[in-house]
Amino acid sequence: MTAFNAVRFRVKPGRDQEFLDAHKDIAGNWPGLKHVNMIKTGDRSYCIIVEWADMDALTNARPNMIATLNSFRDALDDLGGGLGVTDAVAGPVVLALK
Image (cartoon, rainbow, N blue to C red; front, side, top):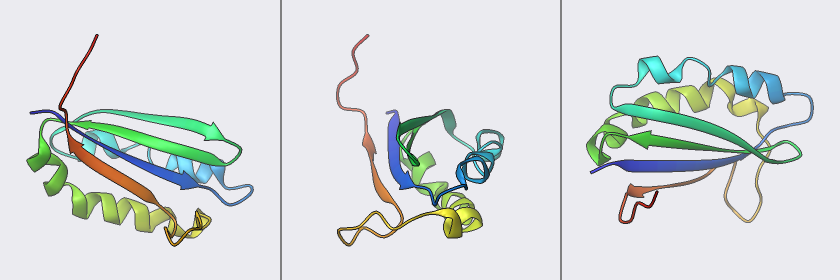
């Protein structure tokens, strides 16, 4: 069953393009990745939403996700509330509407 993960980020001032550039090559490098959308949710705030073939593909990609995050971690601001620099959620699709 298809799965999704979503991660919220806040970028340090002046580092938006560096943050976006770090994500440009991920689609071709992660087996099971079906689609990626990066949305801008506010000033310096972004959310990436990734569609996966299934939960196994998502789970197997975690080392790649961590490596990618580590490549731009210093460009991120703390989200506050004890979250650190990311707010991530993931799970299988339980309802799909057109």
